Length: 247
Ligand code: ATP
Ligand code: MG
Image (tube, rainbow, N blue to C red; front, side, top):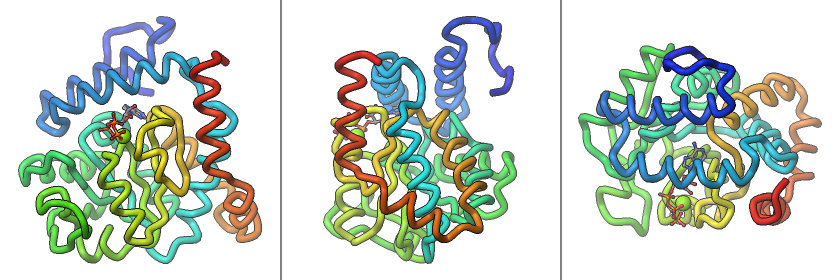
């Protein structure tokens, strides 16, 4: 992680303080919503209980997610205001390694915020960012919540949705899409409806998926194994046990 905060790296809660700082800066830059501050607080509480580390079942989920992204016909990484504030460069790198598109997709949608996030991703190396066309709809959601790019998320067979709202996660699943969800709360509906629930902090999860993708890149058999050996309900049960029982 970079040194964009005035806290020594040796501080025992360095990562957590850096995360808060990035979300706060995201709000100041107009890329993160105020709701995003509240979501971050919830996430942090779960992360604290998980021991602020990637548990084994989350690592298996990250590997399965990498395999799904690599073997997709059309994979899209959905980016909201929290994801953009926390891991902009890491999302761009994941998209480069897997060939997945980046699409800005907001719960509290404004054109201005979408443009700012797209611009921010470009500053971090993205070449193309979808989400501004918004000519597709997710069935079963009200108008503003339903907007996506027809040739982006609308057309995708695999979607990575970090910190997605439960309703939209459910609606995307009903469209038959394979959903890879990053969410620290294993009881959240988003995690519950995911094909691959990744119960881990996005700060650790995105680089981990990229690492797995690099390793699985040319190995179709290993991709198959990562997908076939992954079980979503076991992953959710493991995460809940880690949170309730302590690691
Ligand atoms: P629902 O059950 O309807 O999904 P919710 O409380 O989960 O309700 P969301 O808007 O989906 O509502 O909340 C955002 C989710 O993102 C929370 O579950 C929170 O734990 C998670 N979250 C927040 N910050 C992070 C982070 N840095 N990494 C991973 N997950 C995070
Ligand atoms: Mg949720």
